Amino acid sequence: MEVLRKAFSQKLDQALTEFVGSIDADEFLVEADIRGSIAHATMLAGGGLLTAAQADNIVGGLQTILDLYKAGAFKLNPAFEDVHMNVEKKLQELIGEDALRLHTARSRNDQVALDIRLYALGCIEANLNDINELVETIKVVAAENIDAILPGYTHLQRAQPVHFAHALLAFVEMLERDKARLQDLTKRVAVSPLGAGAQAGTGLNINPALSAKLLGMPSHFANSIDAVSDRDFVAEYLFVAAMCGVHLSQMAETFIIYASKEFSFISFSDAVTTASSLMPQKKNPDPVELIRGKCGSMVGELVNILVTLKGLPLGYNRDLQETKPPLIKTAKEIGNCLRVMTVVLQCLSVNKETTLKAAYDAEMISTDLVEYLVNKGVPFRKAHEDISALVAHARESGVPLNELSLSACQTFNQAFESDLFKLFDPKGSLQAKTSPGSTGTEQVKAALSKAAKI
Image (cartoon, rainbow, N blue to C red; front, side, top):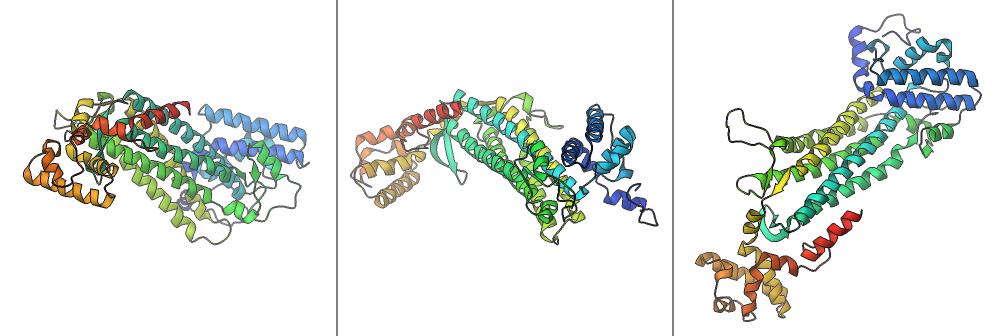
């Protein structure tokens, strides 16, 4: 390590230099670090700690470094340990002695806390855009398949007929909650820690509110110790990302099942399937499976962060360096998963004849039969027991429910009339659902219309 060693009589061992360094993760923080330094320099000038000329020199040099970075001409040197010292050394190379004034009233502790917050805010913005793209794609696919009917499942057993669009809109609800969590998280991330120093603040004339304003942050820290040690927002971001990942995993699992030969409810185009190295006939939904698989690593990174934080004493500890890689990795993974799922939806087709055939399973109308009897004045529990007995009779006799005679049905409840056989049309079952938020045809159309306006 080549910096900050004046008080030491020995060089840091090379193996330890590599061990304590954070160059790999810090590559993702260069822009955030420069943005923060520009704001800090501007604030220092406002407090008389830099002259206007010094501030202009520093800001100009920082902008040059940013331009070099974007052009691929600025690389972090491991000998300088982290992004902060790399930027400072490059700035000194470019503008000379004025660069030595930049770190006035600042510690790497509040500096890195700011960098991570700025990076997280960028991730949140990108995630929101990706979720919006996926949600809009789901809405389009749902609207295009409004007439598709398939079995709904509980316990992975056929339950009741539902609109395919209704099933897709369930995922929209999940993703909208993910968006709301990200939006709410923003106000806890957008808190500037600049001015907290190492942990105790400073006696120099600084204005943390100005730094925050320059960075587009609506607030700044209230406690300098908390400011440098708080990584709650990282844990919270990882939870929100993991929860979104869980929703995507559930979507992926559903599509994988629907696309199997045993179901054949949907098909994926060649653009989102891969081939087998041995079996020529295979079209594997590998991208969807990987979405399901990557959810596990996101959940793991959340646990990683919580375990790192739970044993730390008050104040900054170097353990906090280990909160950067999980944030960076998870942000990348959830972004990729959202974008890939959008492409998958665009390459999905519904096999409507197959789904409708499955939806004609007469036993799935059992609940409709219960409600039929309830409408005839039969108490729900008795109606439920009578239909249970009727289903058992049909199974034992080997005759489908819709093919039993009226007299046979009436032996289980006298309230049955000949109109009961109209209930076995799944389209009619869906039209009969009138409760808010249900899979009723009119309700689903209304939900799609409402979603299209959002």
